[in-house]
Each structure stands twice: as structure tokens, then as C-alpha cells.
Image 1 (cartoon, rainbow, N blue to C red):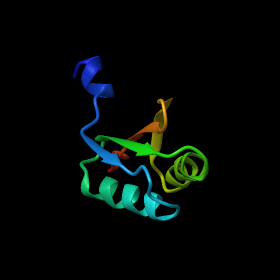
Image 2 (image 1 turned 180 degrees about the vertical axis):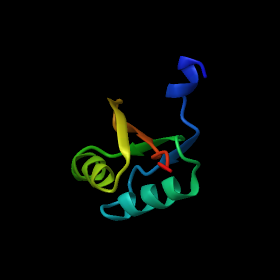
Image 3 (image 1 turned 90 degrees about the vertical axis):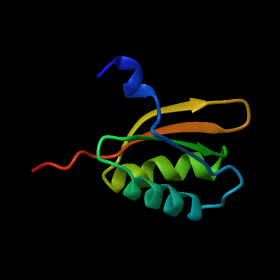
Image 4 (image 1 turned 30 degrees about the vertical axis):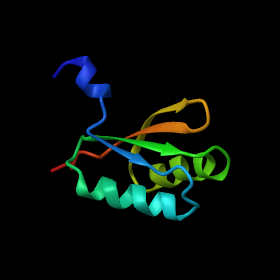
Length: 85
């Protein structure tokens, strides 16, 4: 697996304009549909969404790999956990 595929999202979710906690619920539902180890890029508004959603995802067992501040939103890269046998 090349390094570029490690940071290229497998799916994208635009949740700009979506209030808390709906943005977290939608992110979690999308992650549950994905394969273990897949990467989801989520776009979140500044303020409460970017303050709340990453912490909630971490507490739910997901790995937040990167948070990037864009011009008027944040890009969040979340990794689906790989099931341990």
C-alpha cells in the first residue's frame, strides 16, 4: 500500500450547516457502513461542530488522524478501526 493511499479518503461527507449532535450521528452512521481501515473525510463548521465531533468520535473508538482548517470550514480525517480478532 502506497503512502498516498493512506491519506486519500475512501469517502467524503459534507456536514457544513449541520447542527450538533446530528453531524456526529451522521458521521458515525457513515463510518459504520465503511470497511475497517477505511478513511472518511468529514467537513465540519467552526465552533461547536469542530469542538464536539472529534472528541465524540475518539470516545466511540475511531481514530481522528488529521484536522485541517480550510477557509470557512474544517476537514476531519477519521479512520475506521480495524477489528482485532
